[in-house]
Image (cartoon, rainbow, N blue to C red; front, side, top):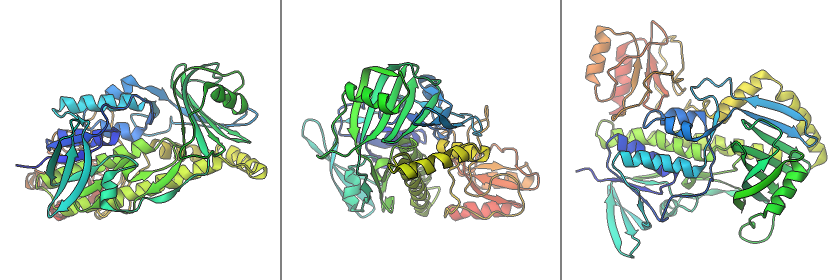
Length: 489
């Protein structure tokens, strides 16, 4: 009997991992030391690529119905002049927008999906020690009543956040630094926001950055950097302080009231070098934390889970060899490096204090943000549809001159078409014309290939696409596809 995969941490990343494995009919246990899921808004946005990947499982519809669509980002100078406006209209996705949804709601919807798959989160359960023993991991779990349970798992997934006990047990360095500034966060109701509620606004003031995220009509999150204070963590702001920052840096006349959540925080940029240690894996904040600029953190962690789940399911099912899992860290670590770099760059640019540097920044931004090509590229990066794995060890050859995406690139989902990777079994999709050779290929690799063919990008070629929607290889002959799939076994 297959031992359950142990998932430590039931935030958005752990819940995503659990729902993915559960729909593949892989036994899981998911534990969390907190007595209940968060009631705070925390991570606020689901980007286009995450919504696409959610469609492969329970579907993104419940999230879209519960959320609020934002379509553009404004960059505003201190005088209130809009230096640039980037819309997401050009994003080639069924979801060309940012979906604003409080983390509390994201977790609720994921947990409901998990419950529908027959798995319940075990709360008030803390992992107090982890030991690798041969081909398994031994975890000591402490329950609410103080009793302890020793659990042996073939695979353990650390989704337990920035203070991860899994990462500490592995002993890997969480390298990086803390920014020397405090930050203010306020989720409030407000009146007289001068721009559409479907727009985020970033104000570059001489004293720092000020950002307004619409959460729903009349409700907003505002962020601002502040001088660093003493102590382990900055104090939570008062409503008087929030309004003072709005008056100083934000739009004239905007009035905040009825706060939902007020918090102070500091920004850490840290990351592990390897997301895998034998039978243990790190995902989400356990592997990488960074500036909230760009709102990429939760999405990056959820996409860690989407990347790993299908691979782990194929290995547990005995369809593929353990070496398939070696691709997880190189693929996702590279993405983590890029997110860390981009978030840090955006934060640095927005918090410039030197007046000359600010003038140069503003002039450059007004020019660059006016370029349509830059706007489209920026929108693709922001919504994460540009993420790919060009240097992945899983990329096979690109035989011939086939059109369409190349190995490591994303295949754009088609509205109304069954998502690649959907269903109870993680299977590759084959874009090819039906022939005797193709039919033989489907039969030979029935555990790896979806029997339903998809229209080829090139009439003379074939494209093999992974269960997470990225191209594995392209070919002219079925033998080339067969060689690739054989290498996974």
